[in-house]
Image (cartoon, rainbow, N blue to C red):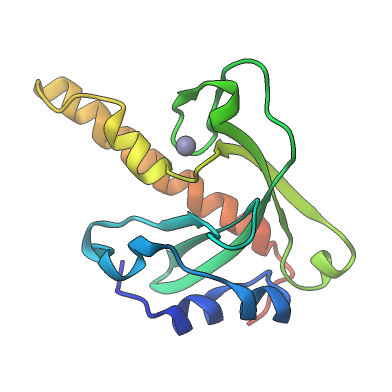
Length: 164
Ligand SMILES: [Zn+2]
């Protein structure tokens, strides 16, 4: 990804209210982010419980969404729909995102299960060892797949009605 400033992150959000955009807080790791090596940037707001953000590049343009974690944790393990890591029930959460534009104003939202810490970018890399070449190839596929799934979730939030 190209490096982003906090201001760019705010203006990249497509489904945020003015209030959410203003109150957004970036994580401690933001200033240390190694943007060259990031496929997307996702974090939980350190000041607003249950609120998170996912920023991807769509056709070279930084595009972000606000997501909210549903309350309550699951009792059994579940698969994160983004990085496909099997997580214990308390480490996976249903996140919903208000759709951008008119659809969002009508109350439409989309949801998916994701790692509760939104750490998919790291989790997909931690999940498998780097040793033999076959393993390496499958890790690469999972990493690519994760990026594609995150992008398509952002696409679902944007929907066909979105106009910049
Ligand atoms: Zn995940």
